[in-house]
Amino acid sequence: MTDRLITAGIDIGSTTSKAALWEKDHMGPYIIGPSTTNPRETARECYDKVLQEAGIGTDEVAFIVGTGYGRAKVSFANDNVSELSAHGRGAKNILPSARTIIDIGGQDTKVVLLDSNGQMLEYVMNDKCAAGTGRFLDFIARSLGIDVNDLAKLHANSDYHPVRLSSMCSVFIESEVINLVNDEAPLTSIVQGLHHSVANRVAALVKRIGPVEDVVVTGGVAKNAGVIDALERNLHIKLRTFPDGVDPQIIGAIGAAIIAKEMFLKQNR
Ligand code: ADP
Image (cartoon, rainbow, N blue to C red; front, side, top):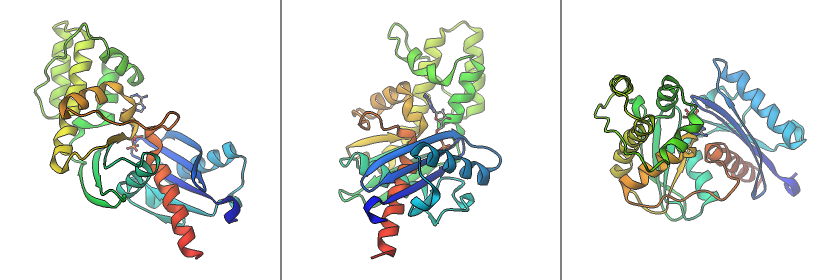
């Protein structure tokens, strides 16, 4: 088995469910799908799909670790770990210089500070306020008739200037956005303003414990280059990105798969 040691990480998030395989010291295939009201079944489906993608059976996976908001529902996992540990381990492994990891997911934002060996020194999280999250961006984008994947393209247009959104709460920001639309403010400026509003909230959290460079962003919102640009301007630092082909949304599942490998090796020493 250790000749071809394959482990799996299953990350059941508030918005998406992910499964990733890790083989010895490199990434295997991975799957990202929507989370559902039946996390138990979704976890199983994600796992089946990733095994199918890899062309292997369950007996070829040595150890499975669940993570994310629904980690307790990954009934077939051998163990589970917090998202903080999973994102920290995944990010450090893929980008060894990473010291500050900012995970911006569907429902919350977490910032993890690592020492140079990858041990977690400190963390902060915001799971009380919807205004700095992916779901908030999804919701506003939908009400503006924009696909969330197109937000970054609009943000990149430098002929416009971001509107200033002064509200702190997602409900009030939404009314501000509706008023701006009625006042015929350019959509591009509204989107840029939204990204700055999300980035301001995330940056406030980051500044509570750092940042110590290198800083990298994980989670689905890391794929929104508009939020990344606004965050870089606020923090006055260049955020690092993962090597080509590594999706920042899958870092938690990869971290869980790496921890699964370590747990397996410890048990079988
Ligand atoms: P969770 O783990 O909490 O389920 P994710 O880390 O999967 O959350 O992030 C989900 C969020 O990622 C979505 O709400 C969406 O806003 C954002 N997202 C995903 N893909 C993209 C993309 N291509 N462009 C912009 N935002 C994206």
